Image 1 (cartoon, rainbow, N blue to C red):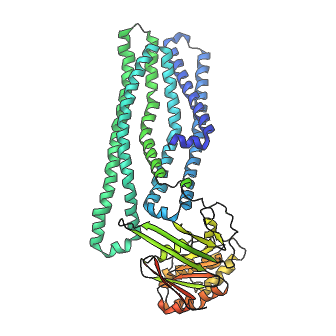
Image 2: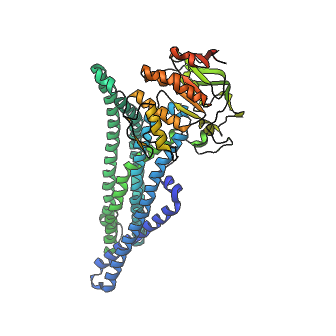
Image 3: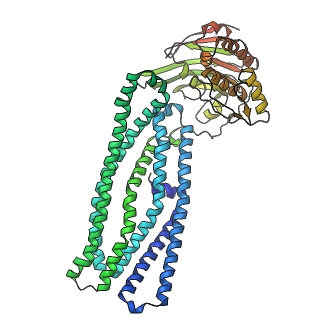
Length: 544
């Protein structure tokens, strides 16, 4: 993908109108040069008609240039907006496992630096189209003045453009190196934000991180960018200097080869001098255009194409809309394998054979690394099994209906995210019901709600988990999953969670799955599923 293709695929008609308007502007520019050249060569011919023609061409140039820039400017704003929204939609539609493999730094770099580089370069295209049209008009007028002289200059320019492109490729290489290092730098930025407390508490760790990680990576990005910028600075200056050589050819060398009229030589010189302005625009645009091209390559390389992944979040399916009443679902010979991040070993969960019924409370237990979180992601449809099948109410889950299947779950993950608005919950009694839950969860003195907006989420981790639980209650879905929810609660509220809140959900016909290490409360469960390194060690039925 390149910028021109991106603009054309958005609205080729707008690009065509803008290019035609820019070309007319270039023709007007050439007309003005011809008019000025005629007036200089024939001072006795100046009259009102010449003046009116000059004014008319100036007004036409103003109109066509303004129209071209306006229409392309609007197009670029739309392209930038749609590019960012489309990228976010692709991220949201991509399988979770694929996003975890890419890593947050790459995604953040694409959404910020890459989209910004494309936006900046897209704005330059508007000026670039007009500059190219003006340059073409100047060359056409030069051909009209003298085809022999224009032929010599075109041969010279072809050689100059070849050399210029060779240098550009070198600069592009260093821009690509800088962009690759940028992903690593964003990872360090994330460390600064998320690991601030640990860095503050350990001076040697902080020094090592700054000197051995952050500064080295930032220095690499700076060196690559500076090298690329130096190449482009030299290339741009060289291109501008090389443009003066045709002027020397026109006014110094050409008269030695033939008897060209003075009017032709002066017109050629004037045309070439005027063409320096669009040429400077073109040369100055090249670094940003190349940077945007590298950014587009990085976005494409993320592998977020929906055609290669599952259907996106708006895909409909044949399953009925999720309702609050209970559902039955089962995992049949399900397995899932993934590669560890820090080494080349693989972890396999399964085969898993489990079934769950409405009104059942199931504890999923096991040591760290036993596969509990992976099992939760498989159960909730965030991971797709490599083998086996998941069935809900006798319907097999496939890529086509997996999105609808996920809507049956209300989940509070151990690494949950808390929204400051009750998004996706459109009901008339939302605020009163939320207030009732705030009182019950002992948060009414900390948090207020108005029009579905929470007054604050700046709470302790335990209180934030209660707010996440509140959101899950409001969703009123048939299946609830709590991943180490009680680990941050005080003993009093932990007792309330296991002895009151969970039984109330099962009494309402909800299927409740709890990942927990709280063996003191295991007797609250109807069934316990014990995992050990990806395998089911045992399933213990406690209640009938």
